[in-house]
Length: 410
Picture 1 (cartoon, rainbow, N blue to C red):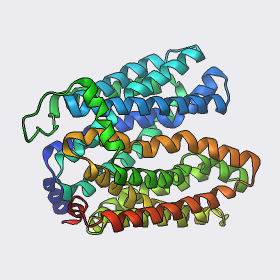
Picture 2 (tube, helix red, strand yellow):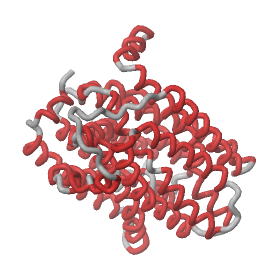
Picture 3 (cartoon, one colour):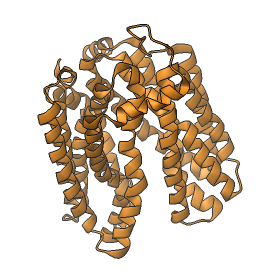
């Protein structure tokens, strides 16, 4: 076992492990606070979930703008500085949000935090693609998912104990962890932005931002983004409507819902490495179709089953799709991107999460409030079928291109 772990360690460059380690620490800080954010808002300011939901939606919209700007800046100035900026903003925001007493001020500050804090996301994804060769990216992104799931096991557990004493400790801890991560990034992480192969004129800031037009005119890439949005619209039900559905329709106690969700994290930790090494040998667009098929089965089960063991089984099936689709989608986004525009392409790839987070909860609310809640899973099934055909069509049209064949090479 030790020899296998040692061999895996030496397969990847030191810089990758530095990125992985700092990411692990940072995600622990984020997950200390994230699961308790809505609870804090409703309790601190005596508002309902509608107001809390508006804050979260506004944060997502601001995050889209921030990641758009951050992606352009990362392509022009480099990844490391943007990541440091995001960590410093996170540290200051943790300190500030924890002491705000006025709801309207908290609302505005939360939007500002979403704007500035999201700037680092494309830089982080682009950095992983910079560091790893094409044939290692799928495995590398898969490892980052395992690391994130480890952090999700640790962070909320610690956060629950801190919240029991005082919610302020959550914000202070997040700020401290962001500061520690920033110091580690500053001391240990080099710049990874590829140098241009040919000497070119230095582009202006406006030219850098307007470079998004290249990504937005890339029709195959936009088709991939569209299919991914449909897939993630379904996947995000795991974090939005599923808990409410199980509580209201099947009267599932929150602790049993925690068991259902824990089965996902445990599955990722145990099997992500193995799954990633298997899927990298197969056409990536077909792997996206396969991932969506598992979502179709898993989420569809919630419309028909009614016992805890079957709820857990459905979540495990969903997680298999997650283990296939999440690393593969990151690899595909990086494969579409010209090297000099990698961070901007990754910022556009962020639409696959931002768009579902903006419209998904609202659409689900309409169904829950006006129709049979079970219809959610039937609608999800239709979206999955459309996405499966879209990914298969992309495989037929693009699968033979060299940029997508490289991901299969062992």
